[in-house]
Length: 119
Image 1 (cartoon, helix red, strand yellow):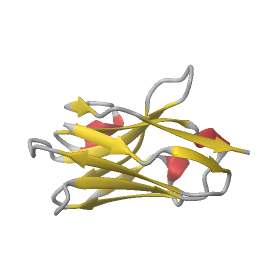
Image 2: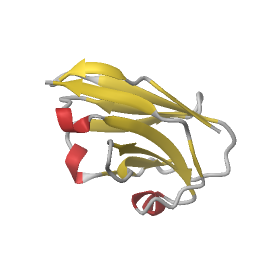
Image 3: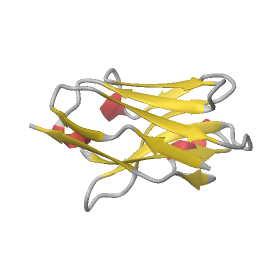
């Protein structure tokens, strides 16, 4: 099970940190995705739980940072220099491998958390 939190309203250029608390350990990777109104859900960032290998979508490289806390079974998405185009519902999900996240091969989804960036 996944529990996402941390969304909110922020001005362009601001920052937010999302959290995804995961229970159970039958997955190898955790990722963040987002879906804007009228758009398809897209991959944002992912992390391999054991190796800490990380992958980012080009649109967020240099602005977003994904990390994990083993003790808390939690994955974070630090979002800096937010843009209006980052506005979306953000979801976390697990996968059996990091590469699967990019093609939305996921084992399970958490509930979404709304991120709204105002101009």
